[in-house]
Image (tube, rainbow, N blue to C red):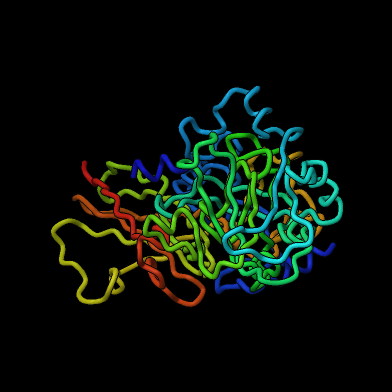
Length: 421
């Protein structure tokens, strides 16, 4: 339980609609008559009280959980050093070049040596025509809880890739950021070039990101510029970006691949708890709250199961599939989105939202998070194991369809609940 509490801290409109209409599920809100409110009629006072204590939907930049690498971490180096190494908007330079070991054919590499490295002014010029925003939860492959959720803004990486005028022998793109001048500290990620040039399944594009929730990226969040890959875990969204390398290599060469990780696995759908009162009095109503990460497979249900110690476990089935799970309430979009958004409004256009409004095209938003709540009418005295899980849009129950830890944590959480006088 403590680990989970620690964890919480016009062209785009049509793309948004197609992207999120793919995720329509049973029980999703009807957006034509969408009640833009957190409270629902008929909800008990004990449930309303628990819901009122939930954290905001979007996370302030300073409240994101930090899992940065480096000795020292790059964001902690002195300001004067940041200027020297290109970690400010004025000093930032990006080299986009060919891989000497697996060379593509490029007519115009962008390098410091040639004096044409890509800078922040170049990025802002592209942003005037190509900027895109989308909501995304940032989460770690091996931790199993969100680091924070926000609206990320940037320019599609493909717009910069095309500036090098590639012609052939380009299959993969890898990239890395500032790493204290120490080769041992370099952390690299990669993507097939097809994912950068095209957005499958109406996903948002891979971007060179410079803003979060309407503000410039801080050093802690990877500023001045980082990669953000919408459907991927955080290790694909490299911070303090300095180099993009175009390559004819045929396989992933991520740093994480060398550590027995599945580097191509997209975000999973799973649930966890946020507030669990313990102890509670026997036969007394109480409320549970939590969050669900809405992965690439979407979300149709969140369910809970309370099992008293000493009672017989349900027979058969993998991952407690035959347990008496009960549906929790997936909360509607909030009135206050949080995250420090300017004027507390969703900036327009933002993928996933109706143009010029704060209304999601569909709910819950894929590749983000959503809160859930559950009211229990009361339990006999005893010690209980509380478990929660998701059911995705295709009917797969957590941790399926991908139960393997190294492809992203999604184990069913177990929390102890005491019921005593």
